[in-house]
Image 1: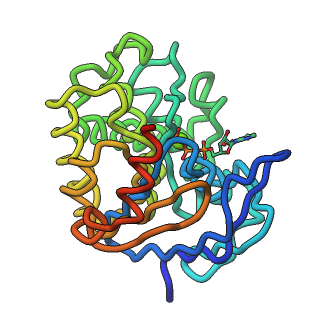
Image 2: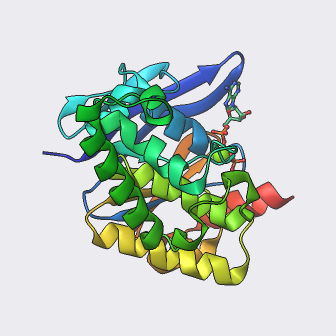
Length: 254
Ligand SMILES: Nc1ncnc2c1ncn2[C@@H]1O[C@H](COP(=O)(O)OP(=O)(O)OP(=O)(O)O)[C@@H](O)[C@H]1O
Ligand SMILES: [Mg+2]
């Protein structure tokens, strides 16, 4: 059974066609990069995959199930997690609380219950969530900061916190939208190692990223979008030498 299969996907906004008949297969256990110039349609594809937007046309199957008409929370519980190009954290909650919130789509305890009174029988579940959140914070090297408010973290750390929060829902597929945006070289290198570590834990990665050094260094497959169309796909080496890809990027810089 295919892991993730996207067929003939199109999306139009009033007057703007963001995606044109895109087909994409993501294989389980891979780091699959999605690149392309600004406005190519990358984030729109993520918004459709995660159920925030509905496609104008096309079909998406995840582990054999059609998901393109499902609500975002349902898609999360099926095993697709994501981070956002514009960081979306609960800024006034602590680092630990932000990760705990990410867990709640998997448990019966609603979000509101966490921060108010808990019935006794829910307490055990709550303690497990806390343990798991602590473990995830160690995994992304933010354990020391767990009591800090999310808003007080430097930008690069906020991006790692978003990843921990997404992992709390135990995704099988993790969508990362420009995870190194705003990071320095050192933070970017650490993030490359973290993404690889996540993949090695069995989580498939679909990665939107503008840092070509990172993309070419860690990806198994690269898909290139330009003006909403898929223009190339293959191993990083093939992509780097593809005339269409070079043209798309050079054109975009003019
Ligand atoms: N909600 C929306 N309403 C109207 N137009 C939109 C919406 N979302 C995206 N678009 C348009 O669709 C096109 C693709 O945008 P998208 O954000 O998917 O590009 P991107 O590849 O993620 O670009 P970037 O690298 O700059 O993040 C753009 O022309 C954008 O203006
Ligand atoms: Mg984008």
